[in-house]
Length: 472
Image (cartoon, rainbow, N blue to C red):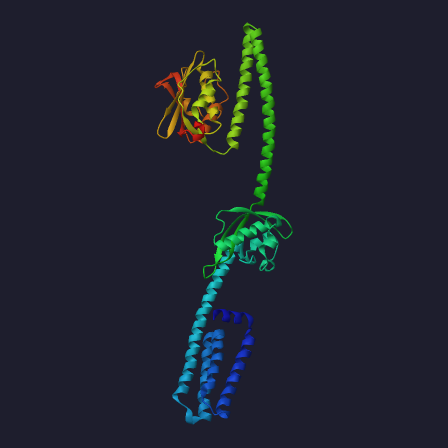
């Protein structure tokens, strides 16, 4: 009934309704005269009176009571005038029934009107929210036609709303290259009743042919029977961000290319310079040889800087994806790079979760102990397995680290206190890598309470079992 009423309300003007009502009342008067005066029959014709009463109740609510009184009075007056011998209580009851029907239908019409007004208010409010939202919202029917689209979506696409509603979404705004695949995803969601759960990037084409990238998410819309009837989709314009990221990525790759070329060339130059420095050191004596030794130290520092920069680049450019690493093999390989140093290590097959940068940790700690330990320093590397962790210790018999320096030792660009201090990156990188693996690192006195008798660096890693592929 509400649909019929709504349709009539939308299609008929007030003047048209009055013409229809007057015509129906005229027909009612004619039927009354014809049945009573001509056919000499009872009030069977009065069943027609329900039509103008109900229509008046639908159109003007309680005003229908006036029409009911008029028609009820017409029935009684006609019977009294033409057939007073057959006037019965049935005629009075019929007139009363007209009034009751008018009141009931008027009441129902008022309730329906209130409900429709509430629905209209809610719909207008929701539409207002959609229009002020900074994202595209669209309802796409199961047949791919656009049912509703908000103001922002119209502006983004360059159409008026009436131009889009009823149009095929995919042939109108989806690029041809991805149209078929997007239609298949849409149809699969309608068939299954479940939309794609995660946001994704979708491309659309505006009226002027410009391609826009949206972060897209949708949900299946169901009818009263619970069956899918369409999809509600929302998309935020991320075109500028995506293009900026692409430009930044291209710039980053270009910068990395230049850095790789520069690193390669500098390393080659350092290698040649280091070779000539060694030759000069063998040929010279006394003060000249000391000068060559300082030159060699400077070249070694340059090599160390290049290595640290390369490590930081790799650290920031790679996602954290740990895997089982043979810790024992890494330690033995790093020790082998210092054949002239006194390094004690009891081999202990152990596996831990890390990545290919773990050798940098071992190298930095061993090199740090040798560099700052002084002549004749002894370095001891040990591994201790615990329940879920493995702790690695690198201890040395050098001059140790003052208590005032310990809290800042792993801070970027904080250097030691002696004349052999580096650029303050090695331990900073070491801490970043250990934390990247989910571990911890600390520095202690080798002999507790005696900072002048050597330093002890200890770090933890997540322990793991030896993988099956490594056993074969």
